[in-house]
Length: 277
Length: 195
Ligand SMILES: C[S@@+](CC[C@H](N)C(=O)[O-])C[C@H]1O[C@@H](n2cnc3c(N)ncnc32)[C@H](O)[C@@H]1O
Image 1 (cartoon, each protein chain N blue to C red):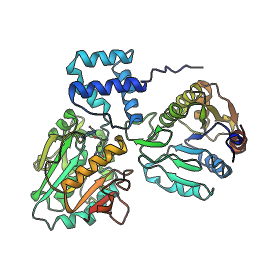
Image 2 (tube, each protein chain N blue to C red):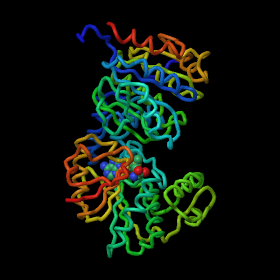
Image 3 (cartoon, chains in turn red, blue):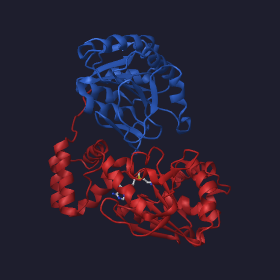
Image 4 (cartoon, protein in one colour):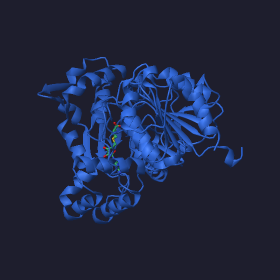
């Protein structure tokens, strides 16, 4: 019988860490879903080989250069291109035709991680011949994640999956025409990036910075508790023009939030809402 | 039902992979009386198989069957299914949460992840069951359940369509009961009915 090392972070310890991150560095994770945060801390302790929680806390206090690493590892950056292909198909069929009637299309990708979602959207816009009049604001809390958006480079090993997703999303082209393969990487065409504005933005502490016709925030709210979700959804409401669209992750909902009554979900049950009031 | 008539158990987590579907259907259909516990089912399956599992299970039981949404409430008498491509966690005794982080044991949802989280929250009030499968997922999670004082059940490997997963679980944990697939439902009824 094997024994499992039970080195799991305790609630009080997690509080200490969150407190330190907030007081010293201004990162506020206190209203994040705790089950997930705990797993992230446990994982960090294993991969960075901290023998105890105290060592982790000590490192953070002594070495500010370690902060980006903690922020990066506490948050989950897993993403893919054309994630939930049928949602992108709905965007093509029901949302882009509406956007096409606008003289100018401003889109916000909040919590877009390493940029796969933004590049997917840029491809959609280009295929609908709308990219020239669009601006895509790509923001995330994590500075190293958004650095990757500037590079426009993704693992070549993922392209098979992404190309399948692309086709399921209603894509008609050869997906490989959008990138050049180099070693193990796929470098996406710079013209897709030409309409992106890339910046850090913290949904907890930063404010609305523009008005958009379409906001994406997918698989970010699941890491927040209900209270913080409400607050962030208010921020989106504030940042969305009337009749604009809000897109969430496939298991996220605005049903329990204060903004629910102002929004109407598209009929096919994809996680796309339209601001009707 | 008076408090003292029911056992201390409040949640049953069931993990299965290849070859587990029939056993799961059977357990759920036999659990129809067990309205004082929440059932949570984690099965490995492809992303595209989306709501089929919930539909299938619904045909077997009068209990409500739901694929879990973000921050869904945990209620007794409901059969919850982990959604494809997310790990299913418990925030506290009342609330689930979802997590789209890295796969564990090549799986998302991972059985280990949910078992460990549920053990953390429900401790001795939890029953964990590992069924047929070709993956080692579930073994660590089941030992976490045992360590937290919960009750552990593994499908008798000989009766499992794929015996690797139950064998792994048995190797790693002092299991409370090793049962044939067909027996599990009836056993649960006894275990969960009386104090
Ligand atoms: C799982 S990724 C989602 C990526 C993409 N939207 C998708 O659905 O594939 C979650 C992202 O949210 C970011 N995030 C977490 N907390 C945030 C906050 N307070 N403000 C902005 N971004 C945040 C993380 O850095 C991470 O990149």
